[in-house]
Length: 124
Image (cartoon, rainbow, N blue to C red; front, side, top):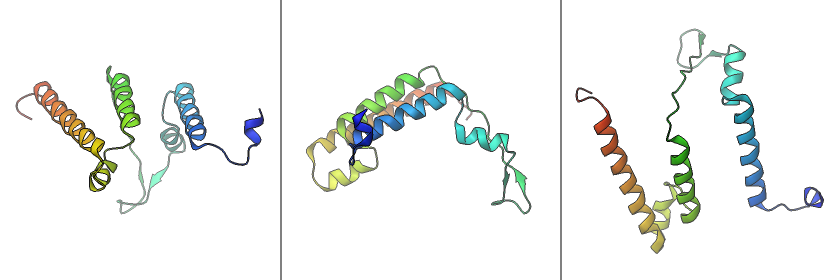
């Protein structure tokens, strides 16, 4: 337990700790804690209403491939060291691997659009 009293912590250990804590909080509560507190406290919105109005947060459905997509997305993010926003900065710095990351982002976006267009009814 000596690592707890260290003066300087590795950012990787801190990131893993935050990830584990957030994962455990979702596992235990089965819902986002911030939204849970808003619903339980019956909070009122002050912005966007002439008077106070209730905050309505619709429940979103869970998709069966969400976990797999998250693992793939997180793995790609970890391997490239870039989120979609920083790829542009890496391209500006002429990093060669940023080209492959940008191609991957565009390819996945196009494939997602193609899959979704097949799933939605033609009238929409």
